Image 1: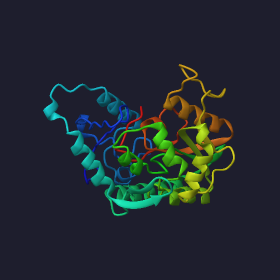
Image 2: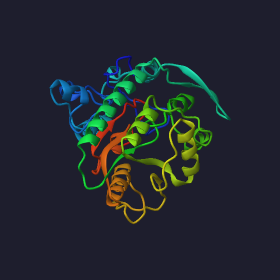
Image 3: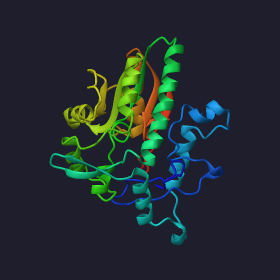
Image 4: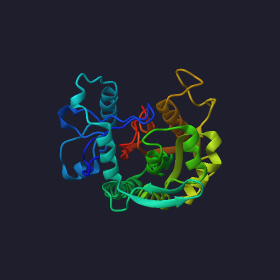
Length: 299
């Protein structure tokens, strides 16, 4: 995306190698890279008393409508190559070397992405500190986090795959722990744990990648998940998941159903962190924290 962290670029992974920009937004609302949203208020705006931005649900509905839009004038659509260049400018360029995968391009520490993530994490720590101090809930306080592009950044794979996606080649990156940590997120997870929050992880990765996922997290600087606190998507839904087209579950059904299960185990989800709106919708999410991801869109 463009160098400004407030610009709106929405990419999707519905077709290998294809990206599409977001259309102009109703009322000038900033959606896809808005960053941190707690309920219907961004932290920055909540503190300054400015207008309320769209809720996560409203943002998700707008992006879904944009994703279904059929242009009638190709000259008004942002060129795909230009959009890819903007995304690369947003993430910057640094290098890292991993076994098998080799030397790859990763986000730069001085990029606009890194700067935006620092602000998000600073705001999240302030919120979690205040929420924990004021917490009087019946359940044990917890946070829930997605993994890919919430805790582990997949930009190097996206570049290597030319903004496409293939499960087999993606597994090479996963098997070799070739995703760096999202900037400042190890700090946030440690902060939450130190302040009495139980940490849960819910990822769309298949259960067959459980061992590799634990290695990926620990290699990137996160503590290993506690037993029963890491959820990967099962091929057959467990009894606590209720999916309209079982055995297939949508992302929202899977993630919200798993959060509801976590709540049933005596926890209160205070905040839910994800880079996709589908990570956050469906209930039992507490405060919804949207992280930036202009690379792809998963409804």
